[in-house]
Image (cartoon, rainbow, N blue to C red; front, side, top):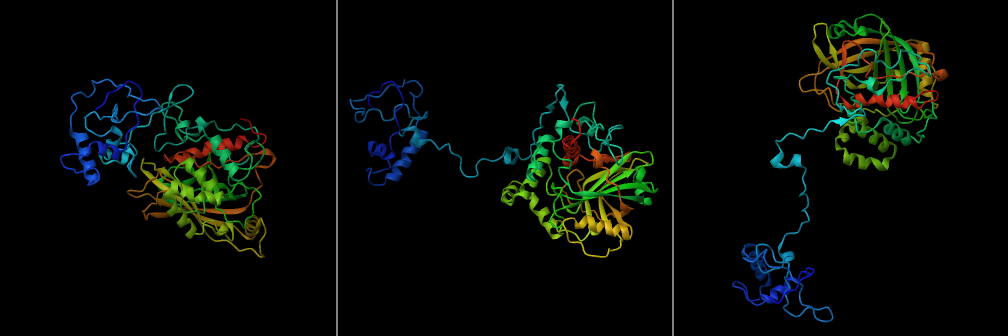
Length: 480
């Protein structure tokens, strides 16, 4: 090769120029004939031929004539020879660093790591420096952690602290382990999805803003009493407070608009404690995490965002189709004729310690159709008031018992068990006086359970009381 100088590495020469410099090769002819075979031979040499001086010769600046051009043959490959030696410049020999299509594979999906467990997530650190842990499976709310007494709650009643919303394990706070999404951020995004400001300026709920309260009773069946020691499942008549609602965040929305409908029931036990049951008309829940739920709500309010959501959450497609087939969003003729499905599963504990995972469904029973036609913006509320004036409205609490392979911790899971029985009857007798007048607040909390019932590790379930507490704090007259 020619003389070398010191300095910057020169640009890599073109392949055809190198081929001309080395046109006479053992297996190739002139540069103009069979140039492809010449290049292949030169590449093989570059990979195979050792260079005894590799790594020992200093890099020198190539000779440069006046005008900035190098003389012919003056070290075109200076500083670019591969470590293994060879004739082609390094840029012409080495493979491109750009990954091939589909080459980047998640570590957990690569065949060499297929049988390796996922790395354990690090425990978060709370404000006091302690590790933040997730709740143990099958825990219930500790004694004294109930949110509110039944019925009316005063405007200055103590709201639940986030740490009191869930059971504790070894006195370690677990709030931040529920979700990476903060309750405040979730409420902000949900309110924004319905065009409502985030500051404290409304006396309505973030979701299920439009609804009404109704009074009634509940009586459990003997099989329910055999599977759980919960006070409201022992067969005696228990007073209930029911709230039927539309699922959206607009308190003045039309009842004729497509929307999911909700039925919340609060049971008041003989000792004064309260437990709640929440259900909706959609038979399948479409997400598994609080973050995905907020994203789904935003996408449902803006159809242009739904395709992107489904790309990121393809497992939501089938539940959406099932809900559409069940006409879950079609406005019902009456709140009294719709079927309501509870999202979450619970563990019932019998007197002998037997544990049973169950899911709830509220199926409509008998009632009397009212006279007249109701077609206004508030037609569902007007219709149910007229129906109750004509007679009581009944519902059956249907319970599905989990079988082998049924997952109680996943709100999207479909249970295959056919063990279904009637656990009791709800009789709604009339319209209740609105307990939220004069600044009162009533919270229906699916994590508020009593002895004989325990919670699952469902992340949606564990996040809901935190979001409810944040939403209540933003209502007028409520303290932080």
